[in-house]
Length: 236
Image (tube, rainbow, N blue to C red; front, top):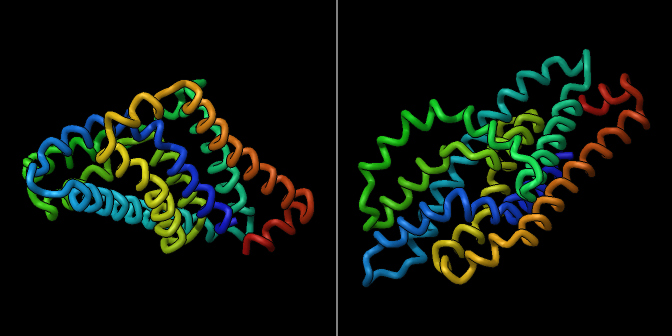
């Protein structure tokens, strides 16, 4: 299931560009105006995204470690499969959110508000973003910005049951977001109207929800094929 999770979250990051445009578009737009006019933009945006993705990987490792602790109970119940089912349900919720059909994923953003209040003042020390190292540092801080998309995918890292696998899953997600964030930074005005179109949002959201449905089918098939006790053996 880990291989499926890595592919799924990469595509979720890629398809989640419609959310990134609304959530981070204005931030990246302001950031772009601070890049020195005589300097190329792409090194700054690449550094910004590298810092952001590194923070995602750290968060994924932490979530995976928590999941690993939970999997100590795997001899009693198939915890990993239950967590995987939960992550699939979160993908469905996320897909509905991206499609503009249900806003439940917004509630997840409240979970990280306390941490962000502590980190946000640090961002002012990196402004203006007139050097690549500052862009890297700012990206690392912005990686902890409360985001329903990120938090939904973190559940998949939790289900991985391993700090290393959790980090890899969030790294794959971050790499999936990379083309969108680079495009937003470099071609903001050109792609804004296209990415925010209702048809694009609906298509991306339904595809993400489809991954969640497929994940639930995989879990259901495992239980159907091996039964409860057999699933515990497979999880082990």
